[in-house]
Length: 75
Image (cartoon, rainbow, N blue to C red; front, side, top):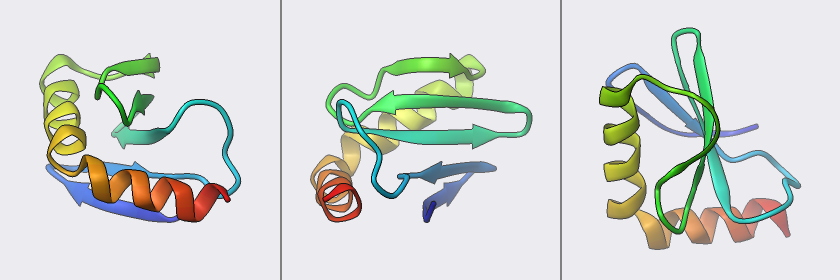
């Protein structure tokens, strides 16, 4: 499970051979959630609102690179 980004104490991962809609996993302290690469919205898990906003901003600002990484790791 390669970590693809780290900012403000938030780690972002895309798991090898993952399935379903394109998404990433975020971890912050004891919180974890999966986030849509299309909308940046949380799909499962829990995350404090402030960090959820930072994750969404990161996803939407890096969407094309994240989709490339998703395709590379899940092919």
